[in-house]
Length: 426
Ligand code: ASP
Image (cartoon, rainbow, N blue to C red; front, side, top):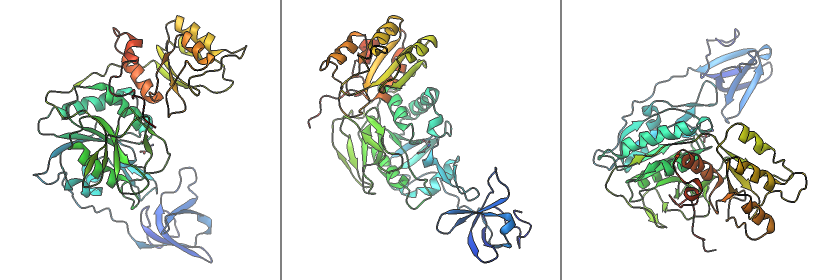
């Protein structure tokens, strides 16, 4: 019971009316905050939460008891539709509104998840669902990317499965999509990563369109690691974007992910797919994972006035490689007498640290030959990564360094999975 003055035993999630001396409010009773049990919280019909001091409450009247009855939903679609598999990893797309706390809570059972997106089953039959872990993507690291890759390998090598959809949190989705681009060798079928910015039980959720378009991508001929999501804030079509040329560029909008320095593979509507650019097609043969990874890699953004001594820290901590996100066409503070980055970079490169550089402008391509500061930086021994995204560069550097017998510079500059683009027309 929440309050001794309650007329019946009102529990969190029940619909109640709270009466103060002069006014009353209706809404869903939420759990009191851990830090202040003297507060009674309700979610108003408008969706806003409001808190009352227990002392001011005259009565809590229960209007409707919360009932947790849920329909039982089969985890499958039409038997004769093409068969796909899903890997569920957590994030908002695997969360729903929690009536007790007013926040979002993870959905851990596939059946719970399937209740929310019946439209997915119109075009595909979800034959298998794997849940290697349930995490917010900010808590993931390279070991999680390896787990997802191994799970995908198993599913892609099942002859009955046409493609795989991976649902994932948005915050670090572009790191995972880059990692899978490198980890899955001899890719024979589509691997589609998707997300939602709003939990799937909300009317405004973006999950439904993203999942419907992902289903079409998973049964298409595009045998690539791709991220499928809203192309704009409208709920009309998605883009299928190459996994290593995509980045989260908005905190909350549905079209949070944008393709950078490349073209999407396809425009996907819920009922049709329009191919836009070249892609690898389905092929026979088995996928093989190559998930070797050196975890001692870092990503550092350069800012005006920054002291280069920070690089000594990475050497001391035995880092093997670092990606510097550098300014403009390819510059670091150079002519500052006390702190020339170029001098420090030369020093740490000589000590064995691999230093790669990527553009902090995000869009465009580095060109270290235009200004003398850029040429000096090149002479300091950096590996210039042209138009590669810094996040993709970090993942690739960890993967390349994981292969002890590889020539790091040669591999970092080799276009392995479309991480470099040809110069794009304006
Ligand atoms: N923080 C969440 C995550 O990345 C946000 C989301 O799911 O979109 O897992």
